[in-house]
Image (cartoon, rainbow over all chains, first blue to last red; front, side, top):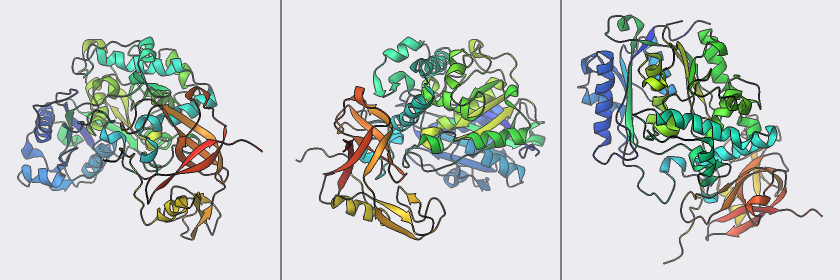
Length: 384
Length: 136
């Protein structure tokens, strides 16, 4: 199979300021800053945009509203969530000629006000989960406990994952947790949230925005920017997030089909992947993705991480910007920030201590076991 | 003012038979009239064969502890911590989420035999919970 996205290039990728809270910002302001930043990165202007997928968490900005912001020039609007799913949707629209240049942008601020409860996006209202006190950490914990029971996955492996990712964020001046070094012992010393997850096993809640610009590979040649190519991608959706019971034997390998599709489209295999912006909502999820995607055998993800292989100097660095554990988790902007992190790393735009040596191919993922969905895409410096 | 209440289910047309049965102290599940598979949570067609010939049947209410997490940071402050959330593998083979009641966090163990019991929360809602089942 040939790469179905071979006519498309990512030409702009931009994150606004990220922080625990951004009281002086509005979501509209963040979205506009993100759009300007990504277009500027691409060397384009709003006049060039004929497709938009723009959203916000609290104020629910709609793509068709922002088409109007752009004076009615955009013809195409996207509906997918603005992560791997949204990037693939936009790429397909460009590939099929529905649009030439698409901006995906999203932002969240002002959502997390009731600090006595967990943040809203962790606890969807549903009659079969809410009344028993479930929320995302507990849902992923139910998967982790079953995996630990089946394979003897040690606590130390979870701590190593969290410490690896948080150590990357500590070195990233743009990360919400910049400067917050983290050792495995500190992970285990942090307070318990939902057994087996301690506080530092869990991602953060923060505010910010992000945007990406895609155009045709042909157009990209004329722009003053370094294009990054989509080499393949796929989705794996098995049920409703945080509603259906997270049963390991049914859903534990979610994402495997998406990874297989990505490899088939791109002609790549595991050895070609230089780094992975894996979705890191909880430490265990990295161990699971390594196994689900075939980077190691089922049950051997703990050994993989305990050998230091996902560290920034390992052979498969994971969440190189600090991920959603340390960089930022702002509503659904965090989904888009996975492919954005891959673009920045492939372009050599990371801080020196986090810059990998001439990386060529990256993975970006969204979703995980507790969420019953997992999407995958591969990005590269050169088209395939 | 009454004591703060945990968030209670708001039944839908599809789930109402389940919650009505709970009020009567019965745990029910949808079973397919074509292939015999059980489907939970409630939906308009069979999860195994998509047949719409679904009937509500009574579950034995017995199962085993499939996975668990003891929660120390509550979803909302109205939940008293720690509390243990569980996936129960029911005798019929389907899985459901609930809380395990009456077991200290350090004693929770996968594979423990469990049984359902009910607690009335409001006029409309009675919730199913699980406790350790003593064999005999």
